Image 1 (cartoon, rainbow, N blue to C red):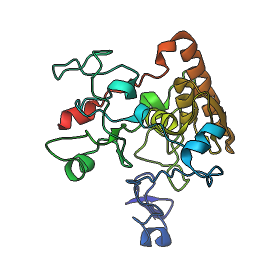
Image 2 (cartoon, helix red, strand yellow):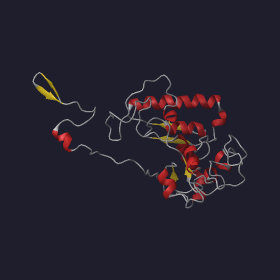
Image 3 (cartoon, rainbow, N blue to C red):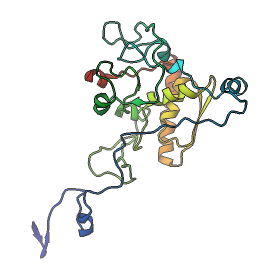
Image 4 (tube, rainbow, N blue to C red):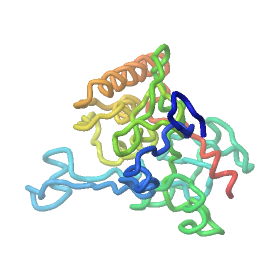
Length: 265
């Protein structure tokens, strides 16, 4: 408690409630931590009577199972057709880039994906066969979030309810609150996009789906209402285009290493 000009005041941490109404509702919020994110796959009613006839006539309607199979033998990452022939497994339970591809075609892709979090590993994945049945993609790292943002100014991160956080999250160059993992979007694009197809993202955000489309070698159209996010998306997608021009081997080669999951096995 301090005294100044006849007034009493008390220093409080930055962001702490001050007024009575705020103190009364201190600790309350407007959202829960997003621990489950549903992904919907939909298609128009078949005009030709069957999926095969629809695909033959219109070139769309099926999902690409073989390109999205989950490795059945090596819990360290992708293998076989799903990795375009690349693997992170060296055959001796170690990691090696572009090691020998597995002979197995892998498991049929499941309708559950996971991020390797401790809760998933303990509650969902069987202890004797961890991660073999589900596609794994880690949450977007800071490096991934800020891909293509070199030279930009870092600003405060908005929380899920739209307010700017005073504490907890440092400023970031890509300040979008829900940046999707690029590997996840690549897997989804590969699953549903026909050869020479085109991806439309009506809520582009910071452009992760656009980067994924570039790396998968398909066309992309993105729409975004927020000007700040649109500028971020353009920067990141343009960087992906430049990257693809100089590193064409990135197309159809998933490169993420599930390091966190390896530590949990």
